Amino acid sequence: MLRIAFRVPADEKEAVLDALMPLLAGGVREGVEEEGTVELAAIGPASTLPAREVLEAAAGRTLAGWEAEEVPADWRARRARFGGGAYVLGDRLVVRSPWDPPAPEGMLEVVIERTGNAFGSGSHPTTQMCLALLLGLDVGEGGAADLGCGIGTLAIAAARLGWAPVGALDRMEAAVEAARANAERNGVVVECAVADLEAEGFPSRELLLINAPPPVHAKVAVDAGPEVRLVIVSGIVGSEVPEVRDAYVAAGFEQAAGYENDSWAALLLERAS
Amino acid sequence: MADVFSPDAAAEAGAAWGQLAAVLPDGGLLISASRLVEFNVRAPILLAPGLFRLDLTPQEETLAVHTRPLSEHPVHWRADESAWDGYRDATQTEPLELTGIFVLPEFSVMAWLHILSFTDRDAGAVHFVAKTELRRPPQ
Image (cartoon, rainbow over all chains, first blue to last red; front, side, top):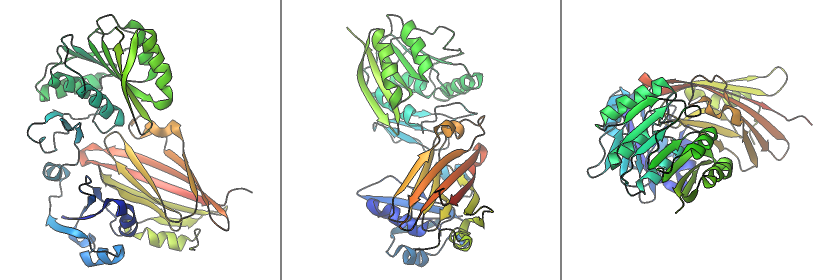
Protein backbone atom coordinates (compact mmCIF):
# COMPACT_ATOMS: atom_id res chain seq x y z
CA MET A 1 0.00 0.00 0.00
CA LEU A 2 1.14 3.49 -0.78
CA ARG A 3 0.40 6.65 1.15
CA ILE A 4 0.64 9.97 -0.66
CA ALA A 5 0.33 13.26 1.16
CA PHE A 6 0.58 16.93 0.27
CA ARG A 7 -0.41 20.28 1.73
CA VAL A 8 -2.82 22.83 0.35
CA PRO A 9 -3.90 26.24 1.63
CA ALA A 10 -6.75 25.68 4.06
CA ASP A 11 -9.00 28.18 2.31
CA GLU A 12 -8.52 26.40 -1.03
CA LYS A 13 -9.01 22.87 0.28
CA GLU A 14 -12.55 22.40 -1.02
CA ALA A 15 -11.62 23.65 -4.49
CA VAL A 16 -8.68 21.23 -4.58
CA LEU A 17 -10.91 18.39 -3.42
CA ASP A 18 -13.43 19.22 -6.16
CA ALA A 19 -10.68 18.51 -8.67
CA LEU A 20 -9.07 15.51 -6.96
CA MET A 21 -11.91 13.56 -5.35
CA PRO A 22 -13.02 11.93 -8.61
CA LEU A 23 -9.43 10.67 -9.01
CA LEU A 24 -8.86 9.58 -5.41
CA ALA A 25 -11.61 7.00 -5.16
CA GLY A 26 -10.41 5.75 -1.76
CA GLY A 27 -10.90 9.21 -0.30
CA VAL A 28 -8.61 11.48 1.66
CA ARG A 29 -7.65 12.01 5.26
CA GLU A 30 -7.72 15.66 6.22
CA GLY A 31 -5.01 16.69 8.67
CA VAL A 32 -5.05 19.42 11.26
CA GLU A 33 -4.66 22.95 9.94
CA GLU A 34 -1.18 24.35 10.59
CA GLU A 35 0.00 27.79 9.54
CA GLY A 36 -2.83 28.17 7.07
CA THR A 37 -2.32 24.86 5.30
CA VAL A 38 -3.87 21.45 5.71
CA GLU A 39 -2.45 18.04 4.85
CA LEU A 40 -4.44 15.80 2.54
CA ALA A 41 -3.41 12.13 2.46
CA ALA A 42 -4.64 9.22 0.38
CA ILE A 43 -3.89 5.54 0.80
CA GLY A 44 -4.25 2.71 -1.69
CA PRO A 45 -2.41 0.18 -3.81
CA ALA A 46 0.20 2.01 -5.88
CA SER A 47 -1.58 0.91 -9.07
CA THR A 48 -4.75 2.76 -8.03
CA LEU A 49 -3.24 6.09 -6.98
CA PRO A 50 -2.72 8.64 -9.75
CA ALA A 51 0.79 9.97 -10.31
CA ARG A 52 1.72 13.32 -8.82
CA GLU A 53 1.74 14.91 -12.27
CA VAL A 54 -1.79 13.72 -12.93
CA LEU A 55 -3.08 15.11 -9.65
CA GLU A 56 -1.24 18.41 -10.11
CA ALA A 57 -2.67 18.77 -13.62
CA ALA A 58 -6.18 18.11 -12.29
CA ALA A 59 -5.72 20.51 -9.39
CA GLY A 60 -4.09 23.13 -11.61
CA ARG A 61 -1.42 23.73 -9.02
CA THR A 62 1.75 22.35 -7.48
CA LEU A 63 0.99 20.05 -4.58
CA ALA A 64 3.38 21.32 -1.92
CA GLY A 65 5.12 19.06 0.58
CA TRP A 66 4.56 15.95 -1.54
CA GLU A 67 5.36 12.68 0.22
CA ALA A 68 4.92 9.11 -0.97
CA GLU A 69 5.80 6.06 1.12
CA GLU A 70 4.93 2.42 1.55
CA VAL A 71 2.59 1.78 4.49
CA PRO A 72 1.03 -1.35 6.00
CA ALA A 73 -2.30 -2.53 4.64
CA ASP A 74 -3.59 -3.30 8.15
CA TRP A 75 -5.46 -0.28 9.49
CA ARG A 76 -4.32 -0.80 13.08
CA ALA A 77 -0.67 -0.77 12.01
CA ARG A 78 -1.28 2.43 10.06
CA ARG A 79 -3.22 3.96 12.95
CA ALA A 80 -0.30 3.23 15.29
CA ARG A 81 1.97 5.17 12.98
CA PHE A 82 -0.16 8.03 11.73
CA GLY A 83 -2.92 8.26 14.35
CA GLY A 84 -6.29 9.48 13.22
CA GLY A 85 -8.56 8.24 16.00
CA ALA A 86 -7.57 10.59 18.81
CA TYR A 87 -9.25 13.75 20.05
CA VAL A 88 -7.36 16.52 21.82
CA LEU A 89 -9.30 18.54 24.39
CA GLY A 90 -8.06 21.85 25.71
CA ASP A 91 -4.41 21.04 24.91
CA ARG A 92 -4.42 18.95 28.09
CA LEU A 93 -6.31 15.75 27.43
CA VAL A 94 -6.18 13.18 24.66
CA VAL A 95 -8.99 10.65 24.20
CA ARG A 96 -7.76 7.89 21.93
CA SER A 97 -8.33 4.31 20.91
CA PRO A 98 -5.84 1.60 21.92
CA TRP A 99 -4.49 1.69 18.35
CA ASP A 100 -3.54 5.34 18.24
CA PRO A 101 -0.06 6.57 19.22
CA PRO A 102 0.37 7.58 22.88
CA ALA A 103 -0.44 11.16 23.83
CA PRO A 104 2.45 13.64 23.75
CA GLU A 105 4.44 13.81 26.95
CA GLY A 106 2.83 15.98 29.57
CA MET A 107 -0.72 15.45 28.34
CA LEU A 108 -3.29 13.37 30.15
CA GLU A 109 -4.80 10.57 28.11
CA VAL A 110 -7.88 8.41 28.24
CA VAL A 111 -7.61 5.19 26.24
CA ILE A 112 -10.97 3.74 25.36
CA GLU A 113 -12.26 0.99 23.14
CA ARG A 114 -15.81 1.30 21.91
CA THR A 115 -17.74 -1.94 21.68
CA GLY A 116 -21.28 -2.59 20.48
CA ASN A 117 -23.54 0.43 20.33
CA ALA A 118 -22.29 1.97 23.55
CA PHE A 119 -21.45 5.65 23.46
CA GLY A 120 -18.35 7.68 24.28
CA SER A 121 -15.51 7.26 21.78
CA GLY A 122 -14.75 10.96 21.97
CA SER A 123 -15.78 11.58 18.38
CA HIS A 124 -19.16 13.05 19.31
CA PRO A 125 -19.50 16.78 20.09
CA THR A 126 -21.37 16.09 23.33
CA THR A 127 -18.52 13.99 24.74
CA GLN A 128 -16.00 16.61 23.69
CA MET A 129 -17.96 19.48 25.24
CA CYS A 130 -18.44 17.58 28.51
CA LEU A 131 -14.70 16.93 28.66
CA ALA A 132 -13.95 20.58 27.93
CA LEU A 133 -16.19 21.64 30.83
CA LEU A 134 -14.67 18.98 33.09
CA LEU A 135 -11.16 20.26 32.35
CA GLY A 136 -12.18 23.71 33.57
CA LEU A 137 -13.14 22.51 37.07
CA ASP A 138 -11.06 22.48 40.22
CA VAL A 139 -11.05 18.94 41.55
CA GLY A 140 -13.30 18.65 44.58
CA GLU A 141 -13.32 16.17 47.44
CA GLY A 142 -16.86 14.90 47.04
CA GLY A 143 -16.35 12.51 44.16
CA ALA A 144 -18.07 12.24 40.79
CA ALA A 145 -20.66 10.09 39.08
CA ASP A 146 -21.12 9.56 35.34
CA LEU A 147 -24.83 8.89 34.77
CA GLY A 148 -25.43 7.22 31.42
CA CYS A 149 -21.74 6.43 31.20
CA GLY A 150 -21.60 4.52 27.92
CA ILE A 151 -18.10 3.12 27.59
CA GLY A 152 -16.95 5.21 30.56
CA THR A 153 -15.03 8.03 28.90
CA LEU A 154 -16.23 10.85 31.17
CA ALA A 155 -15.87 8.79 34.35
CA ILE A 156 -12.36 7.72 33.43
CA ALA A 157 -11.39 11.29 32.54
CA ALA A 158 -12.72 12.48 35.91
CA ALA A 159 -10.76 9.78 37.72
CA ARG A 160 -7.62 10.63 35.80
CA LEU A 161 -8.05 14.28 36.77
CA GLY A 162 -8.17 13.31 40.43
CA TRP A 163 -11.86 13.06 41.28
CA ALA A 164 -12.56 10.22 43.74
CA PRO A 165 -14.57 8.19 44.27
CA VAL A 166 -15.99 7.95 40.74
CA GLY A 167 -19.12 6.02 39.84
CA ALA A 168 -20.40 5.10 36.38
CA LEU A 169 -23.95 3.95 35.68
CA ASP A 170 -25.68 2.91 32.49
CA ARG A 171 -28.78 0.87 31.74
CA MET A 172 -26.98 -1.13 29.04
CA GLU A 173 -25.06 -4.07 30.48
CA ALA A 174 -22.72 -4.14 27.47
CA ALA A 175 -21.87 -0.49 28.04
CA VAL A 176 -21.09 -1.08 31.70
CA GLU A 177 -18.86 -4.03 30.79
CA ALA A 178 -17.02 -1.81 28.31
CA ALA A 179 -16.70 0.97 30.89
CA ARG A 180 -15.28 -1.50 33.42
CA ALA A 181 -12.75 -2.81 30.88
CA ASN A 182 -11.79 0.71 29.86
CA ALA A 183 -11.33 1.80 33.48
CA GLU A 184 -9.02 -1.15 34.02
CA ARG A 185 -7.15 -0.29 30.81
CA ASN A 186 -6.54 3.20 32.19
CA GLY A 187 -5.54 2.01 35.64
CA VAL A 188 -8.25 3.96 37.46
CA VAL A 189 -10.87 2.91 39.97
CA VAL A 190 -14.41 3.49 38.70
CA GLU A 191 -17.43 1.84 40.35
CA CYS A 192 -19.40 0.61 37.34
CA ALA A 193 -22.97 -0.61 37.66
CA VAL A 194 -26.07 -1.28 35.59
CA ALA A 195 -28.93 1.08 36.48
CA ASP A 196 -31.96 2.58 34.79
CA LEU A 197 -31.60 6.23 35.75
CA GLU A 198 -35.22 7.01 34.96
CA ALA A 199 -36.43 4.41 37.46
CA GLU A 200 -33.66 4.02 40.02
CA GLY A 201 -31.58 6.21 42.26
CA PHE A 202 -28.01 7.30 41.74
CA PRO A 203 -25.06 8.20 43.95
CA SER A 204 -25.15 11.84 45.01
CA ARG A 205 -21.64 13.05 44.40
CA GLU A 206 -20.18 16.55 44.28
CA LEU A 207 -19.97 16.32 40.49
CA LEU A 208 -22.47 14.67 38.18
CA LEU A 209 -21.62 14.05 34.53
CA ILE A 210 -24.73 13.41 32.48
CA ASN A 211 -24.51 12.98 28.72
CA ALA A 212 -28.06 11.71 28.32
CA PRO A 213 -31.42 12.72 26.86
CA PRO A 214 -33.79 15.23 28.54
CA PRO A 215 -35.90 12.69 30.52
CA VAL A 216 -32.80 11.67 32.47
CA HIS A 217 -32.07 15.29 33.30
CA ALA A 218 -35.62 15.87 34.48
CA LYS A 219 -35.25 12.96 36.91
CA VAL A 220 -31.76 13.90 38.10
CA ALA A 221 -32.67 17.55 38.66
CA VAL A 222 -35.43 16.50 41.05
CA ASP A 223 -33.46 13.78 42.83
CA ALA A 224 -30.04 15.45 43.18
CA GLY A 225 -29.21 15.71 46.86
CA PRO A 226 -27.49 18.65 48.56
CA GLU A 227 -24.11 16.92 48.12
CA VAL A 228 -24.34 17.62 44.39
CA ARG A 229 -22.55 20.92 43.75
CA LEU A 230 -21.78 20.68 40.04
CA VAL A 231 -23.59 19.10 37.10
CA ILE A 232 -22.19 18.82 33.59
CA VAL A 233 -25.11 18.34 31.25
CA SER A 234 -25.15 17.26 27.62
CA GLY A 235 -26.89 14.84 25.30
CA ILE A 236 -29.27 17.62 24.37
CA VAL A 237 -29.68 19.82 21.32
CA GLY A 238 -29.88 23.60 21.43
CA SER A 239 -33.67 23.71 21.37
CA GLU A 240 -33.80 21.50 24.49
CA VAL A 241 -31.53 23.74 26.55
CA PRO A 242 -34.21 26.00 28.10
CA GLU A 243 -36.31 23.07 29.35
CA VAL A 244 -33.33 21.17 30.77
CA ARG A 245 -31.71 24.26 32.28
CA ASP A 246 -35.00 25.34 33.86
CA ALA A 247 -35.34 21.95 35.55
CA TYR A 248 -31.95 22.37 37.21
CA VAL A 249 -32.59 26.02 38.06
CA ALA A 250 -35.81 24.98 39.79
CA ALA A 251 -33.72 22.54 41.81
CA GLY A 252 -31.35 25.28 43.00
CA PHE A 253 -28.67 25.33 40.32
CA GLU A 254 -27.51 28.13 38.05
CA GLN A 255 -25.70 27.96 34.73
CA ALA A 256 -21.99 28.70 35.05
CA ALA A 257 -20.83 27.87 31.51
CA GLY A 258 -22.05 26.36 28.27
CA TYR A 259 -21.05 25.31 24.78
CA GLU A 260 -22.84 24.58 21.54
CA ASN A 261 -21.37 22.57 18.69
CA ASP A 262 -23.07 21.21 15.57
CA SER A 263 -26.56 21.77 17.08
CA TRP A 264 -25.62 19.93 20.32
CA ALA A 265 -25.30 21.72 23.64
CA ALA A 266 -23.49 21.23 26.95
CA LEU A 267 -23.95 23.15 30.20
CA LEU A 268 -22.12 23.47 33.48
CA LEU A 269 -24.57 24.01 36.32
CA GLU A 270 -23.46 25.01 39.79
CA ARG A 271 -25.53 24.92 42.96
CA ALA A 272 -26.49 28.48 43.80
CA SER A 273 -24.94 29.68 47.04
CA MET B 1 -24.33 23.63 -18.50
CA ALA B 2 -24.13 19.84 -18.42
CA ASP B 3 -27.30 17.79 -18.81
CA VAL B 4 -27.95 16.97 -15.18
CA PHE B 5 -30.21 14.06 -16.18
CA SER B 6 -27.64 12.33 -18.38
CA PRO B 7 -26.87 8.80 -17.12
CA ASP B 8 -23.77 8.67 -19.28
CA ALA B 9 -22.33 11.82 -17.71
CA ALA B 10 -23.13 10.60 -14.20
CA ALA B 11 -21.63 7.13 -14.74
CA GLU B 12 -18.49 8.68 -16.21
CA ALA B 13 -18.16 11.19 -13.37
CA GLY B 14 -18.19 8.50 -10.68
CA ALA B 15 -16.43 5.79 -12.66
CA ALA B 16 -13.50 5.67 -10.22
CA TRP B 17 -15.73 4.09 -7.55
CA GLY B 18 -18.15 2.24 -9.83
CA GLN B 19 -21.04 4.65 -9.62
CA LEU B 20 -24.08 3.53 -11.62
CA ALA B 21 -26.68 5.74 -13.28
CA ALA B 22 -29.99 4.94 -14.93
CA VAL B 23 -33.01 6.78 -16.24
CA LEU B 24 -36.00 6.35 -13.94
CA PRO B 25 -39.14 4.88 -15.51
CA ASP B 26 -41.22 7.90 -14.55
CA GLY B 27 -38.56 10.39 -15.56
CA GLY B 28 -35.50 11.70 -13.80
CA LEU B 29 -32.21 10.03 -13.02
CA LEU B 30 -31.10 7.46 -10.44
CA ILE B 31 -27.48 7.52 -9.29
CA SER B 32 -26.29 4.81 -6.90
CA ALA B 33 -23.05 3.53 -5.43
CA SER B 34 -21.67 1.48 -2.58
CA ARG B 35 -18.36 2.06 -0.83
CA LEU B 36 -16.25 0.74 2.03
CA VAL B 37 -14.71 3.74 3.76
CA GLU B 38 -12.16 3.64 6.58
CA PHE B 39 -12.85 5.66 9.73
CA ASN B 40 -11.77 9.30 9.43
CA VAL B 41 -11.45 9.15 5.65
CA ARG B 42 -13.51 11.55 3.57
CA ALA B 43 -14.62 9.67 0.48
CA PRO B 44 -16.86 10.58 -2.43
CA ILE B 45 -19.98 8.43 -2.53
CA LEU B 46 -22.19 10.04 -5.17
CA LEU B 47 -21.39 12.56 -7.86
CA ALA B 48 -24.22 14.24 -9.73
CA PRO B 49 -22.51 16.32 -12.45
CA GLY B 50 -23.46 19.96 -12.36
CA LEU B 51 -25.35 19.54 -9.08
CA PHE B 52 -23.44 18.07 -6.13
CA ARG B 53 -20.89 15.63 -4.82
CA LEU B 54 -21.74 13.69 -1.67
CA ASP B 55 -18.72 12.94 0.52
CA LEU B 56 -18.97 10.99 3.77
CA THR B 57 -16.48 10.92 6.64
CA PRO B 58 -17.33 8.10 9.07
CA GLN B 59 -16.14 8.27 12.65
CA GLU B 60 -16.97 6.01 15.57
CA GLU B 61 -20.22 7.75 16.53
CA THR B 62 -20.61 10.54 14.05
CA LEU B 63 -20.92 10.74 10.32
CA ALA B 64 -19.84 13.91 8.57
CA VAL B 65 -22.06 14.45 5.54
CA HIS B 66 -20.65 16.84 2.96
CA THR B 67 -23.00 17.92 0.17
CA ARG B 68 -20.57 19.86 -1.97
CA PRO B 69 -22.34 22.04 -4.56
CA LEU B 70 -20.90 21.84 -8.06
CA SER B 71 -22.45 25.01 -9.41
CA GLU B 72 -23.00 28.59 -8.33
CA HIS B 73 -26.78 28.23 -8.38
CA PRO B 74 -28.82 28.28 -5.14
CA VAL B 75 -29.32 24.97 -3.37
CA HIS B 76 -31.30 24.12 -0.23
CA TRP B 77 -30.79 20.86 1.70
CA ARG B 78 -33.06 19.43 4.34
CA ALA B 79 -32.35 16.36 6.48
CA ASP B 80 -34.90 14.03 8.02
CA GLU B 81 -34.00 14.31 11.72
CA SER B 82 -35.79 11.09 12.66
CA ALA B 83 -33.01 9.01 11.09
CA TRP B 84 -30.04 10.90 12.51
CA ASP B 85 -29.21 8.29 15.12
CA GLY B 86 -29.25 5.46 12.59
CA TYR B 87 -25.52 5.72 11.95
CA ARG B 88 -24.50 5.41 15.61
CA ASP B 89 -27.13 2.93 16.69
CA ALA B 90 -26.94 -0.29 14.66
CA THR B 91 -30.36 -1.39 15.92
CA GLN B 92 -31.94 1.30 13.73
CA THR B 93 -32.35 0.31 10.11
CA GLU B 94 -33.77 3.45 8.56
CA PRO B 95 -31.50 5.17 6.04
CA LEU B 96 -30.31 8.72 6.47
CA GLU B 97 -32.46 10.84 4.21
CA LEU B 98 -31.80 14.24 2.70
CA THR B 99 -33.71 16.30 0.20
CA GLY B 100 -32.08 19.00 -1.89
CA ILE B 101 -33.58 21.58 -4.21
CA PHE B 102 -31.31 23.03 -6.91
CA VAL B 103 -32.56 26.26 -8.45
CA LEU B 104 -31.06 26.25 -11.95
CA PRO B 105 -31.62 29.08 -14.46
CA GLU B 106 -34.01 27.08 -16.67
CA PHE B 107 -35.67 24.84 -14.10
CA SER B 108 -35.27 23.37 -10.63
CA VAL B 109 -34.10 19.87 -9.73
CA MET B 110 -35.07 17.94 -6.63
CA ALA B 111 -32.58 15.42 -5.22
CA TRP B 112 -33.87 12.74 -2.85
CA LEU B 113 -30.94 11.07 -1.15
CA HIS B 114 -30.70 7.87 0.90
CA ILE B 115 -27.66 6.57 2.77
CA LEU B 116 -27.48 3.20 4.48
CA SER B 117 -24.48 2.25 6.61
CA PHE B 118 -23.04 -0.82 8.26
CA THR B 119 -20.03 -0.47 10.54
CA ASP B 120 -17.39 -3.18 10.45
CA ARG B 121 -15.27 -2.29 13.45
CA ASP B 122 -12.76 -5.10 12.87
CA ALA B 123 -12.09 -3.62 9.45
CA GLY B 124 -11.94 -0.11 10.91
CA ALA B 125 -14.38 0.88 8.20
CA VAL B 126 -17.99 1.49 7.30
CA HIS B 127 -19.93 0.08 4.37
CA PHE B 128 -22.16 2.63 2.68
CA VAL B 129 -24.92 2.21 0.15
CA ALA B 130 -26.19 5.48 -1.24
CA LYS B 131 -28.55 6.55 -3.96
CA THR B 132 -30.08 9.72 -5.18
CA GLU B 133 -33.10 10.27 -7.36
CA LEU B 134 -33.05 13.46 -9.41
CA ARG B 135 -36.34 14.80 -10.67
CA ARG B 136 -37.98 17.98 -11.85
CA PRO B 137 -40.25 18.98 -8.94
CA PRO B 138 -44.00 18.83 -9.60
CA GLN B 139 -45.36 22.07 -11.04
